[in-house]
Amino acid sequence: MDGGHWKTIEEAYRGGSRYLQNRGVDTPRFVSELLLRNALGCDRTRLFMRFGEPMPPEAARKFSHWLELRSAGFPVQYLLGEQEFYGRSFHVNPAVLIPRPETETLVETVLRESRRFGEKTPLTAVDVGTGSGAIAVTLAAEKPLWRICAVDRSADALGVARKNGVQHGVDDRVQWMQGDWLEPISKCGLRADLVVSNPPYIPSGVIDGLDAEVREHEPRMALDGGIDGLDPFRHLIRQLPDVLNLPGLIALEVGDGQSGEVAAMLRKLPESDVFIVPDLAGRPRVVGARIGFPR
Image (cartoon, rainbow, N blue to C red; front, side):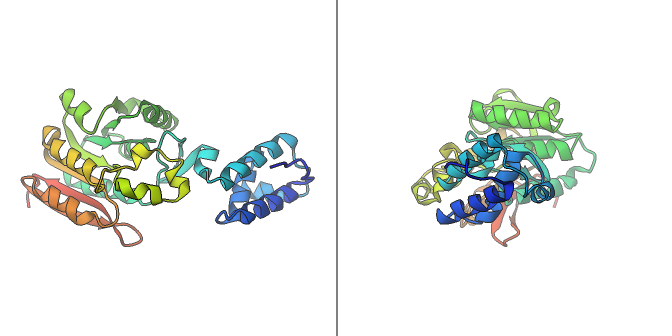
């Protein structure tokens, strides 16, 4: 897209909105404003105050390029390189899944359930499949006394996660580990009080039917949960006794229609007290178990 014909910032905003609308992009005015603000490096108030100013050529080139990519389905979060989660900004790129608001329910569940150990008890928590590190970094920031271990099989994802740990001042309290599921934890002889995971849980056959924005741009490894979407849960729950202290807690994010089967897996663990937590939309989103706690 050639943005050289925009004389003012207002023309760029309106032209960008029309361009996105004509290509079927959702909320075109909002997206145009967001991309334009970032191209200019200003906040919303300053953007509208500058509407009458000439459109800077370098910002016009960047804005035009972003409009083309967005109209082709490239996620806004990857274009801007960030996504907010639990009140903090996180670096993201195509090596990691974009953090979703629903996952905040998982974090809130862990923070609430951890009170069973005592408010000021130093705990060890493991985040499996850390991706961008949103869960691990958030837990470290919210709980300064905790030790966090974050595991991912992707070296590129761990690079993004570590960057987020540094940005939020918690990198020295997070141990980043590459490997599958809980294997790096057990191989190191580590024990955890809490295990948390937002694993891949989309059935393999469903992925090709997802929105192109997800299907074509987010990492398949972070989406594909096997034939029925439940393989990651089987791996995690099978390995759990090797790493979990008693009493201990596990909390897992699940997809639609999966809560019953995951709960049944957890009930097979000795001394397990299984619970299900809905997200803000009322859908079962977190399945967890308190293991070895007095009832």
